[in-house]
Image (tube, rainbow, N blue to C red; front, top):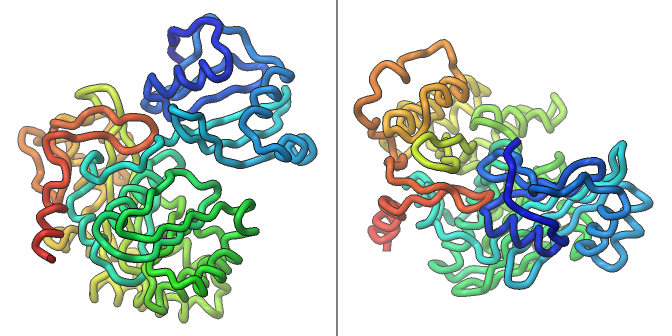
Length: 401
């Protein structure tokens, strides 16, 4: 772990210092030196001793709501959001561990991101014109899923006159109504659970519903019903590809209902965006690797017939329609000199194929992939790229109007 430059700071000073240094997370844990994460690497606050339990509990008391500390002390876990004026918002988790208490704070910028500021594939612009159906953004923890969804909601808020309801645990980015009516509900505070909030949302005249995560069969079924009845539904899953996303969804159902679920999903699912952040070699920071699947008639047929392993090949054959495979994304980042051969090899999902490393002199012309002009990401979200901002997304939307 690296050493930071920070001397004898109090809680608020540590938080502001970490935010100012583009941290994505802050770790304040008993028996450990205070630390924060930058570009995926854990960094110590310098010249600070390990924290004791009493100090950490004091920090926890500052970020939890008034009745939260007693709940934490009795249960050993607590999730909430916290805002520090003039600094940032935070997704907070307090928990007990063997040596005492710990606090992890995920940093969320005060304003939702602009799609133009993120290195997102241009073909994501197709999602902005969908009227109904289910769209899933998937990837491991810390891969920028929430940031991508926040940017999409922010763009819809600027371009369409709709009613948007978000169901989050906790609320992260705060959206200011523009052309849309926006209601943001926090689980545990504004509603008991995703499933109960989803049931209520269907009676609240929504056009667009953002559900933080599909966690169980009940929430899955309600999300599909909402998508089937004319709503545009966004959510996330912790899966690494479109095929594995569909497998995960189907596995939620008992065996006797899986055939029906495949049929339902084939008509309701509209897109899966799988992403992961890779370390850059051209500058500090990380860059997004993407797989994008839009459900056309061919993929819908593969889902219906449970031929899920054939989906990746179909995505590759449909790159002209804006679809991207993980290998295409890695190859392009490597060819542009944004990631190293070692990173490309490490994150390749098909390590037996070495053609990605044989000819790196020319960029691959994959749909909407970033060029080498990117900048390091600004916190825990997706990275900035000044030389190709909205690019084809703006042109795509303009041509649709």
